[in-house]
Length: 104
Image 1 (cartoon, rainbow, N blue to C red):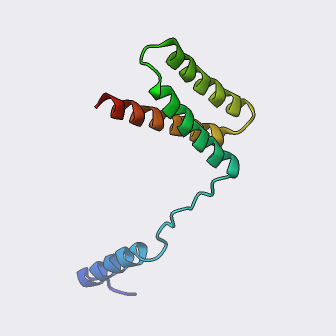
Image 2 (image 1 turned 60 degrees about the horizontal axis):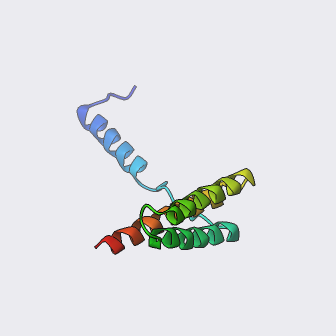
């Protein structure tokens, strides 16, 4: 029977750490974007920018924002959740960045 010494335990622990730390590094998945999702993001950015350029607290701006939410809902109802996510994210980012730059 093998006698376990402190040195052997230390060696075994070190090898375990080395073996667990090497290789098997997670590969970042490259997410493929469908044409519908890409088109939805482009459209969302355009709609968000247009809404932000309308006069603040105006009926027109409110209508544009409601239209953005309606389009998102329509995409979700059609089963295009990733396109809806891309659309609303791009619209929100464009709206916020355009509104901030106009306020400066």
